Image 1 (cartoon, one colour):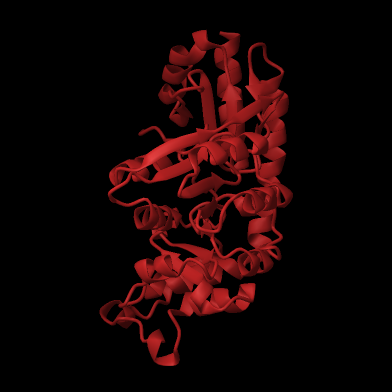
Image 2 (tube, helix red, strand yellow; image 1 turned 90 degrees about the vertical axis):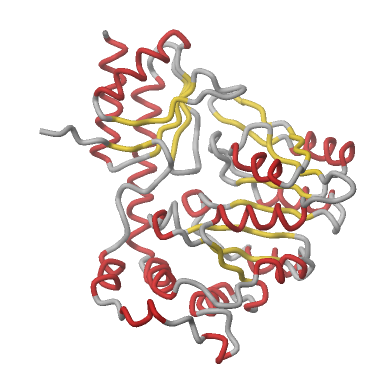
Length: 349
């Protein structure tokens, strides 16, 4: 019998979307595959853009869609950190998703970092450090993820406003909120923040919280000062019509996702209790759908082979600052229990 592989290494959503999403797929009008969207005839970018406009109380000109949040991030960096006579600069967290630097490199951008520091069993953004680096480097763009991957810490609204006040309006501020709904279901701050901050782009995704990673659809909100990007990101022929319907159906299932998030919070506490009590282990607090775990360096290779043999695929990090750390994506409660028991079994020998 073939061994079941459980993938908990890419921050995906192992519970899957609600039944209403599958109903849309089951009953889909397949003629839509052959025809471009006609939303422009109603003065709208798309069905999903119109839905988001109404839901968040912002004009459609402030809404954008992309092929996942990844696509929007790539677009905005390529738009503003692009080839020029002088090299342009992107400011990112010291510990962050490797992809941020990669997309800046694609257009010969310079990447500088601001500090994130460990405070016991959690990480924190160094806001004063960020301001200092900003003054020294004068970057063209600041990119912050909240919650941050892989450290799991969030940027408070108060700290974000400090950042906004400290930078010039010709500096683009990008806030990657792919994991934000795990930390805070309240989205009421988005409308005033976008209205008050012309140089802000806030990026979200349907991949993480909504469990639609394979659908590849993301969305965002941009301030009125980003007219260059509004033109750069516009899609004349529209977006995937079926994906839009699925995304709307998912957003309507608030209770379904809140229950899953409740289970994930329970499991984060369980990981902290069960693994955090073992010698040499630190389970860091996380506002996202993953946890970062520091383990004894001597265990890395053996534990990796042990977990792989059991078909439990977690991320063994191997990058500057995180050479003996695990990043474990939260699966179902059964899967999470299997991971805990397997790690404990290996430690017991």
